[in-house]
Length: 282
Image 1 (cartoon, rainbow, N blue to C red):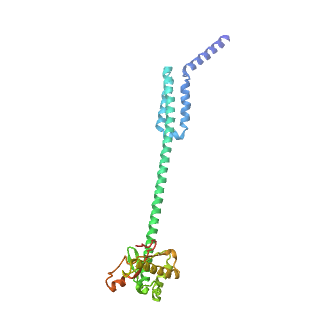
Image 2: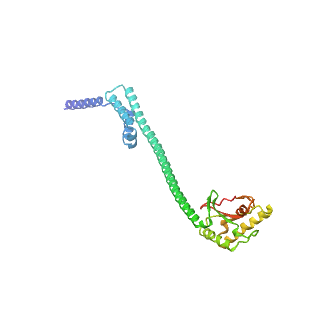
């Protein structure tokens, strides 16, 4: 009986020794590398951004495990395990780096998109403003043409200075600055237009012929310009629309050596601005 028990114990001991001899020794570095690699496999971002580095880490783990299974030299197994652990770390770092690069590229793309959107808005706004300006210019020109038609009886002429109405000496008696009744009737049409279009300006300019002294002619031309201004104010035209100035005999439109020329030079000119601009005085 004792002999049988001793035999059984001997068999069990031999089996235990055999089992120990077939199990590779544990390598702490390899165990850590395996743990790190399992964590890496669960990192979706790294798997997406650094698939090559992740695969290389897996290959390094496999090489270390194969060396351990073959019972290669412990130093060799340790070296391969260390390299595998480093491969895992490199793969994780590659994932972080590429994630950062992706974020920077995404931010740059977002900025580019914002700049493009801003330029598009600016271009749209400019196009709309141009369309509005063009439409307003067309409307203004249409009203300017209508004004010329309304003042056709006064023989208004379009010039670089604006629309010019020339009122001859029929407005005044010789040497006088009081408007005749007929002169008031001629101004009424102009007054009506200016009241209808308060955005327009009128520069009133008085002129004389060369008869008499320069100072006398200048004073007379000023009084006549002021008389026209006063008449228009009396008709209800806004003061901010009107200016008045006398020029005496300094701007003749004809020779002063004959009665006809002197009559043409005795005049009041009214310069009407185009819509949206000021009348251009001399």
